[in-house]
Each structure stands twice: as C-alpha cells, then as structure tokens.
Length: 293
Image (cartoon, rainbow, N blue to C red; front, side):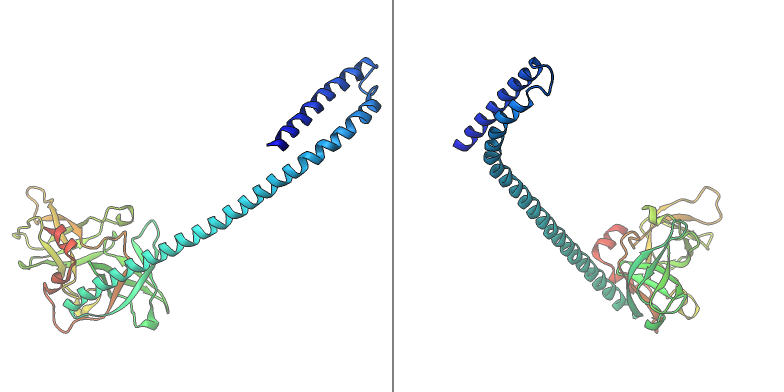
C-alpha cells in the first residue's frame, strides 16, 4: 500500500514538472529553449520513478506470463480429457452395437465377418466404407447387416476395405416378404438417408394382397444367398400409399436400421443352412420392436 502511494505521488510530481517545463520552454522562445533545464531537473526524478515502477512492472509481467502458461497447460489437459472421454464413448457405443449384432446373428445362423464403418460415401450415393476386405474373406454381392437389421450389400472389395451400398440408396432393390402372412414384394431406397430421411418404398407383386400398417418385413433371399440371404429384418409398414384403382398396393417403409448411426456391421460370408424365416425378428432389440408396434 505504501509503495502504491509513493508511486502515485512520484507520477503526480512528474506530471506537474512536465507541464511546468513545457510552459518555460515556450516562454524561452521555443520547444528547445528549456531542454537543458528540463534535463537537469527531470532526469533525476525520472530515474527515481523508474526505480520505483520497474519492480512493479516486472511483477505484473511475470504474473501475466505465469497465468498465460498455466492457462495453456490447463487447456491442453482439458483437450486431452475430452479426447479420452470421446474415445471411451465411441468404444462403448461400438461394444453395444457388436453385442446387438451377435444377438441378432444367433437367431439367423449366418456366418459373418464383423467390421467397422470408417467413411461415408458422397452426395450422390448412399454408401459407406468398412475396414474389412478380401483378406478377411469378404467378396462382392454379400449381405451386410447390423444389430437392428439390414444395412445393404457389398459392391466393391479391396484387400483391407470394402464399399457397402446401403439399402436406402436410390438404386437399391430388395426382395422382401411380410412376416407371418408371407406376402411378397420389393423395397426400393429413397436415396436420402444421409439427409436424415431413410424412408423406403414397398411395392407388392400380388394384386389381391392387403397391407396393414405395422407389418414387419424380412429379406426374401436370393439364389445362393447373394446378394441377399433370407430372413434379415428390413423394416415395417409405416403407411399404405396405394392410389385408388392401383393394380397393387404400395407403402412407405420405416427401416429398422438407423442409417445415420451405423458403426459396427456384419458381412454375411456364408448363408444359413436353412431359411430362418421370421426367427431373426426375435433377436431385434426391444427399442426396435416397439417402433414397429
């Protein structure tokens, strides 16, 4: 406190002296007239003020430097903690997805190779890249699923990665049948899953078949199990959209799979020995089943 008063007093004296010197200088005929007197009077005072204020300035400089260093250290530690939490959350989410996939597969009897999604396709196609390829036993035209149901098919294979065309892609056509009633039709993608709209479209083959909202759909299966193995859950009827006088019924389908949150998938490298029919639906998570009701 005493040092602060002394500093203020010195600064006040310096200010008064400066004003006086300026006045004397101009009275003596110009700005340089009083420079000698000013130097002889102002110099000692300036040195005293410097001696007083230098330790104070040095203290604040050191304090500011220390604070900035501490803040930078804390920021780095905070960033590291955030990254660690994020990694743990991702690992936890993938573990849950893997568990759901294995539970679903247990009801289907498929032989699968598990993989993780590592990239998402472009604006003109609904595709993802997974971190497994030919060296893992994967080939083109194989069914891809996750713990919620159908994901799509493998369209391109490299040694360590593969491209998967999602069932929501505009070019995707999946043969399906309704659970229990066995009505046959095909589901096509809307090509908008990456924009958050993953609704698909169903067209029936039978002109006399009747659809009702809530009916569940599974894959019909292809010859030799490629590109689609039978019995994989696809989705449920959201609403019937047939126009009056249409030859066959059409409907909007809500897929079981959340295509915006795919993490862990399974590629079916060998079909089941027998058609699982509707058994795989029993392996769906409870939250997915509730959506179909």
